[in-house]
Image (cartoon, rainbow, N blue to C red; front, side, top):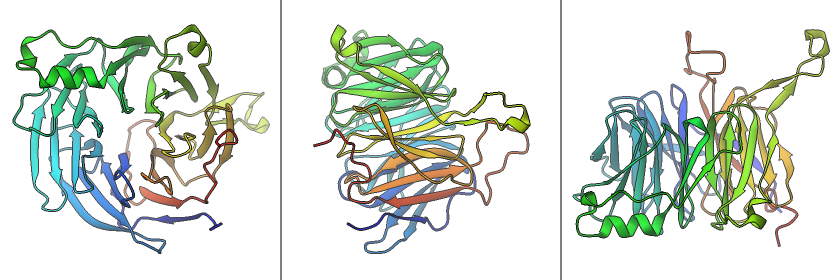
Length: 356
């Protein structure tokens, strides 16, 4: 079995990382969005411990999220400029797909339904038909400000303020959008509405690749795992646990207390269904969702872990590291401290005990 290796991407962003994502399938392309108003495209070179910068795409304002589209040559971005954009990664051409009235926090692409969904701090979702960019997006009002968004093969999970979680059925959204005049119909209702299992603000959400459920994390060092099936039996399986905390040393007046860090990032392994979490404590941990246990914790990174992503084939884990906002925004600078690490996983490194 090949040993795991870890390396840094060349020419990282100059300010905080907002998101990173690998291209679908076996592509080794990696997109990183940043507060420095750019999106960076890297490629992990075959047979080497290198991730080389192959393109930079400038925006007018900080970019808050990025995702790939139907191919490794297509990307979509969300930003403080209130716009949802499509980028042709081959030509660099940028096209505005829709405009929100406030910053766009999240963007996610559903491969199964060819839908692009954006979530804005204006309290709306925009559902775009990427096969026909000229079509007006479907607007869905939300009861709160969205902070995290994730899609499974059939569901869309929106985590908002006030511990609100809405789950939408993607086939229903697709059907509504393809109807004759979707804007004249009442907006689709959530398939389910839930209250977060976590008491504090949701920081990240990620869906299980087998379409069974999702995980959420909070600013208060906790992760919750839930299932979509709303039967009493399935709901009894949901659980939450503490993580990304450090004991305060006795000589600092610890007295058994913990320093609690936000859990900024979650990512499910596409093959094994285990998941990674990254926190303000600068650590990344791997968890077995079924067995409810931590599999491993990696050596601490130099700064807060802002974003995580597994490659489509599950062979790589990308880690975005930069100074966190835990201590406030005064004199913040990510210059020289923002890094993108890529870890090539060992063959069974992310395989849970329960996995067959």
